[in-house]
Image (cartoon, rainbow, N blue to C red; front, side, top):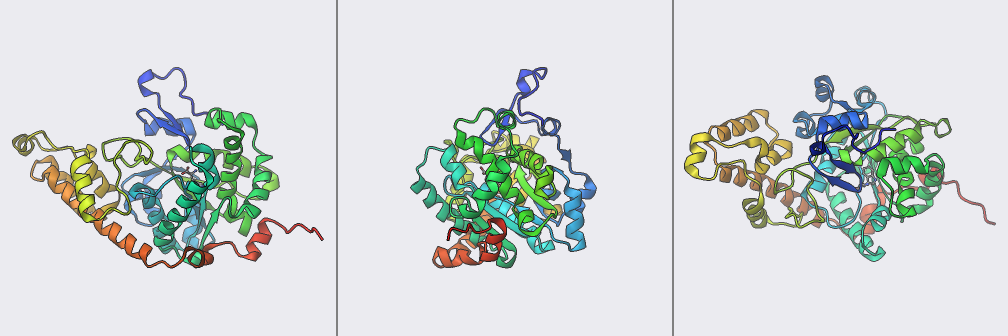
Length: 393
Ligand code: TRP
């Protein structure tokens, strides 16, 4: 299994730490593919995915085994997506975009979507008590429900709440993961809790197949979560599980407002919150979004700006402006100095505010959480398939 440690022969400047628990340094996305053993998406694969800017414009840029997933989607055979959430705090803009992407795939090809919430993982990894995690879990669930997944094709599991099924399966996967694999893949985990957690996330990624037999399952994730996929694929390769290896669709990080790197909710980094109203979004982008424009208006008019590093442009490009001609025209006008940094910011802020208003309308229309969640939870039949009832009496 490839390790996350940068090989010692690489120049120090290229050293980057990329694990589920730490992302640090300048990431060379191409080198990462060698290190992780994944493949860049081919043009043909990009075209076969349901149309979405995140794929078409190369944010999701690599994968493993995507052909089998695409073939099943094209043939109308069962195909599933697993995309989870670690409820460590309120979700912000960057957190919900992948769920909207999964919803697009669901609408386009009828994919079954599984959304596991790893409250156990975040309790173990963060300095938060169980009550705080539970509060974030409830809050995050409202945002996940607001995305508007098809309840007939979507399953939400919560690790501690659904422990009756997650735990027996995690015991099975844990039995197939060695300590040295965990150490090599994640670095030495701080506690035995985090040593065990990869067994739980392996269950998440296998859930569709444990319920419905072997079938192509796609895990769209940012590259830092790839170690979980590698461990799970190892497990899935063992005969006793009777499942195929889950496929991965690997994404680059969207830039944080202040420039390249991961959009973080933990640091000082300003973020766009799902609760931000139009004026707040405008102000945040205006104040904090890293600009690829020039220092003065005259300079900008003369030399033009750089859309590649301009965060407002990057957001339009990755998600909020679907039309190829429009996005190309914006880049071109910006490079020529006709379009100003403030223009791009105003446009991005408007799109993002529209998106958030629609999200909030759906979120506010939700009733009490329990009944809203019910159609997405595992039913008795599914529970029994995952965890045969113990016979006590
Ligand atoms: N580990 C992920 C995180 O920290 C959350 C997560 C749990 C997840 N299960 C998953 C992500 C399955 C993708 C697929 O954010």
